[in-house]
Amino acid sequence: MTTATRPSGDRATGPETDPETEAARAAGLVEPRTRRRTARPRALALTLRALGPLALLGGWALASATGALTQDVLASPAQVAEAVGELWGNGQLADALGVSLTRAGLGLLIGAGTGLVLGVVTGFFRLGEELLDSAVQVLRTVPFLALVPLFMVWFGITETAKVALIGVATSFPMYVSTSGGVRNTDPKLIEAMRSFGLGRWAIVRTVVLPGALPALLSGLRLSMTLSVIALIAAEEINSTEGIGYLMAQAQNYSRTDILAVCILIYGVLGLTADGIVRLLERVLMPWRRAAQGGTR
Image 1 (cartoon, rainbow, N blue to C red):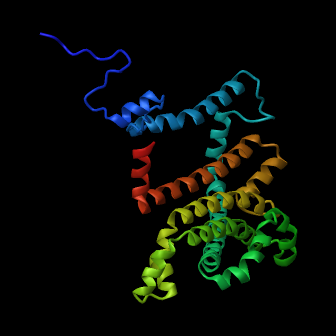
Image 2 (tube, rainbow, N blue to C red):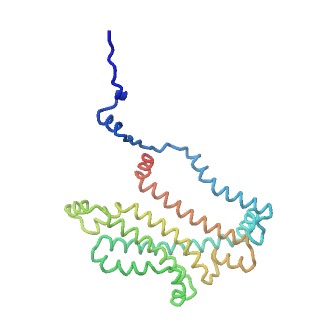
Image 3 (cartoon, rainbow, N blue to C red):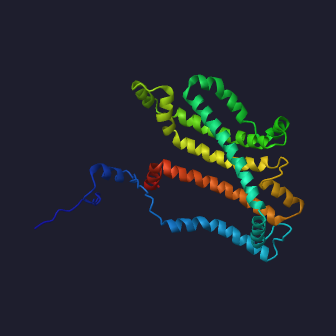
């Protein structure tokens, strides 16, 4: 009984190989492998996210304990915690936080709303783009901090100047994201809706805005981050209340502990704003998270 022998030049192939795969291997081509994202426990993910801030806090405490970081340069974490208790106990922190959040919220509402409307008008209507886009783009290149002296002349040292500055800073990111998202809407889908008799504003409400939702949330994230940055600048305009006022008073008395508290509050506000947008993305776009989990 004789057995068939494979020629020496041939390679052993498994039962699932085909001629095309064998030819690709002979040519030296590598079969691509798709990487799939493995599920990670939520507790582990939260722990990993907390490692960075905890490492910074530990380094800060160690530098303060060893004397490498003196109190006149930066107070220790324990002194900062005591300052938080002091400010919260006498009501100054709660009052200042409420005033600052009101300023940032009003400015964000006005700025993001204005950017959304202008973005839809210029992105969906050709006449709106021709009339408004060039002017808005020119204004967008002006740093909002350069408007502080002009706003002080126009509005004086009032809340209007502070809210207006935050509104201007937050309007342009929302405008750019909205305009781009609206322009990227599938024109065939718009034509299909028109064939069903929908008007322009009905198409915007039912087709364009839902399709541009990822761009809208991206613009909202940038606007919310800029609202905190603009809040810091706005509260430097001779404020008599708010987090900026606390910082000014702490600077006058060289209270580095209170200065650190105010800086940390600004950071927490920015982090909270980013977390709100992430939550909105999970609620409004659940398919996006599922798609990312399957491809990464």
